[in-house]
Each structure stands twice: as structure tokens, then as C-alpha cells.
Amino acid sequence: MSFEKEFLERIEKHKGIIFKISKMYMADSEDCADLFQEIIFQVWKAYPKFRGDAEFSTWLYRIALNTAIVFLKSEKKRRFIGNEDFSNYKIVQDEYDLEKEEKLSKMYNAINQLNAIDKAFIFYYLEDFSGKQIAEQMGISEGNVRVKINRAKNKLKDALSQSSLL
Image 1 (spheres, rainbow, N blue to C red):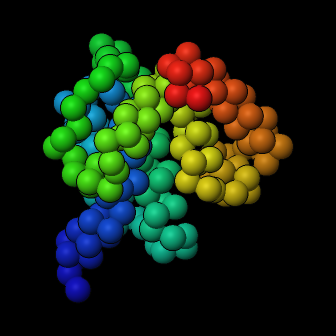
Image 2: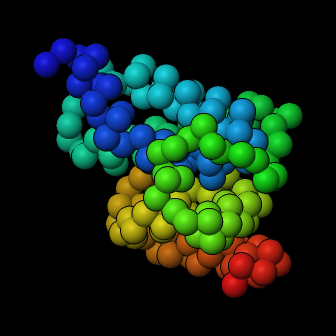
């Protein structure tokens, strides 16, 4: 199998990860699309260095989250909160009914109120990463992970209660 074909198959299989991270970090649909493309570009640049020591999805999470954080820092003019139309992204949207889609939209808006690091912890938490896996990804101790996740969850809970999702 060619290098490019292998890459495209892996991206196709894991594009939901990229979509979720893009949507978590960018509320505006154009910004979300830009971040989505930037993540794919950064993964493509790093792909020759992927050795397979870890799962591709784990490696992708790390690059995608780092790219999202850098993207936020480099684009201070970005809008972070808003109700945008993500109809161009049929990746995840088709799986939800209207009520679930509204709740999901409120959750993403609440997540968008968090800072970039808290978003990363919430993302790992929602994706059921273990404390050990998060510690390895973030380069901190498991104890510190527990503290940071609890703080991020409390901030998210406050944001959600303000939007009456809870």
C-alpha cells in the first residue's frame, strides 16, 4: 500500500477525532474548517515520523490537541463562542436527532468557554482516556491529571448550568 493511501485511510477512519477537536476549539464554522485542515496538514507533516509505538489514534490526539492550542494562540482575532451551522460536517451530525443535536450544541458552547488546556482535559475525559494515558499525553503526573480534570469538570458544569443544559 502506498504511503499516501495508507495516510488517507487512517485519516478517514479517525476523522471523527479531528472533527470533535476542531468543534471544541472553534465555534465559528469557517474557523472550525480551517482548524480541521490545519490538523490534517500537521498530521501529514508528522506522518513520516509515526513509528507505530502507540496507536495511531493516540498519536493523532496529541498532534490534534497541540495544533488546536497553537492555532488558538496564533489567531487572537478568532471568535470562540457562537451558534454556527456545522452542516458541512456530516461526519458526526447524521448520527443525532434534533434534541440530541441541540444538547450537543449547548455542550460545545459551554466547552468553548473553557481555556485551551481545560478543553484538552475535558476532551480526554469524554474520550474515556485513563489517568495514566492523559498523564503521558500531557506530560504531568496522574495526581495532577485528577486535579485538573476535576477543576475542568467543575468549570464545565458551571457553564452548562448557566445554559440550562443540566
